[in-house]
Length: 380
Image (tube, rainbow, N blue to C red; front, side, top):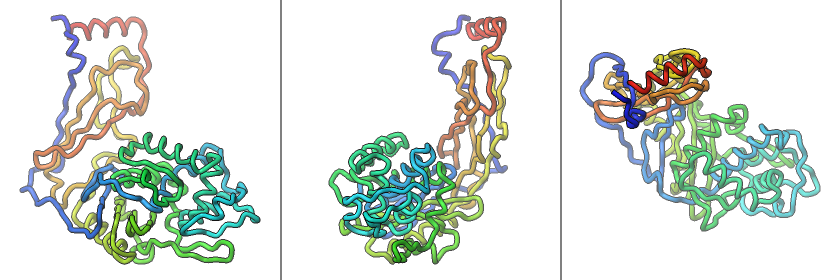
């Protein structure tokens, strides 16, 4: 029978069941948190574990500086800035409102010093100086922030400055902030340790990191505080226990103590109420998928990094996975190209989908193999 055009949309399916027999379904974890909006994020899998008002638009205050830092790290990686580079301090940066690292127009400051001042001391003056060094002006830098927000998939964020000072069109959400924090840790691991430094001295003034969890929890190694009168007290915290990293976003709490205490409660609950499962090792072939018109008939598919997932504690035996191949796969296929989806089901309910990639390259085959596969596709 001639192959109809709709056959191109068909998929091949392989069902695997993990961890033996099914247990009785547990109660979904929940916790009450005293904040306007909050979010708990699994950094490895990208899962949202728990949340309240995750997509409510809020004023981010100094949490904005995560995006400022992301662009600064990117500029360094692209050799547009150097850590040892001296930056001239403008009047605008020098006169910045709010928290400062106390840079001086008469004294050149390095990019490395500005990063320390922005991240540890939450210096608005440092943020503006970096923005001007990267984009020429804070206004142009804000345009870059918005372009980067779109690229990273921040769907409900709008930036108007590098500092987080209030502006009606400067807003974000707990979900977007978790995505941004996770991207910063993933894309710039060499700079992430800056967020764990407890204090920094510049211009003969020592200021502490305002993230109190750095002192109270040895597993917490970042990330950023924020506060204005209208935003309330905010904190993004990241903690790693074993192979698992969780990121909490706490927005609009009533005090410094509240943002620290509620963040600690949420992180503790997340590690206790969810089990981390390593399903596949990075580079491990979880399937061999057919390829058409290529130099080989099959390709190895899997994950480029270890694939871990969080499930409610005690429910690992209720997890099943379904590998859905994006057939027909036509050569050429590049290593790292998505070739399948891994669909997770927990206790019979959908639990997420994740891209599966080619672990090897498959170039185009010779004229004979291409012709033969054309006939195969036509009649299948």
